[in-house]
Length: 205
Image (tube, rainbow, N blue to C red; front, side, top):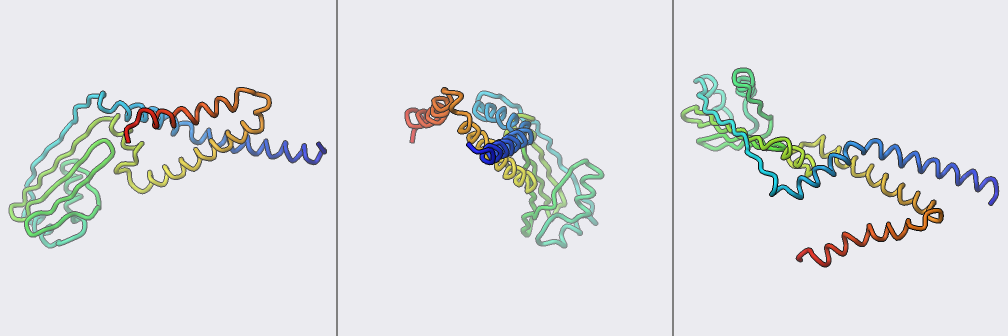
């Protein structure tokens, strides 16, 4: 092999190793989180959780109710949202609410729980309920991307791309060093065939 080819090969392997370790470093915590939540999701039926429910009934003032009654669509009025947060510690979202002639309803699903509120447009009674299913449910929903918002969705896409880079660069390193490790391809074949065999033989279709 010429000196030029050896230099090019050395540079390409060096670049490949850099891609491999950088992607693995960035993905390390994420991969650990997703591995752990993969176990908790797989045993979700065995993990008993007692949801914590916060239910409240509030009465809007006439001025506040009049402000709400002037709306027919869109999010809750900012004055109502500020009052709920300032006076009662209830954080609401700017999501579009469901309006009709008698009631306005705002659903606020979130990772690991759920929340909602409704306002009776005639009496001014506000009902609020917040359900918290605990940290395990929270991280399980992060794993699934359930009710996590745009930023987490983008993170999951970027994380998945980095995991692909980590896996493909690792595979290519296996190709480069397979001659020095005879067990490489039997182990790779075992890792590829095992889940396929389990699906074919045990998973009902």
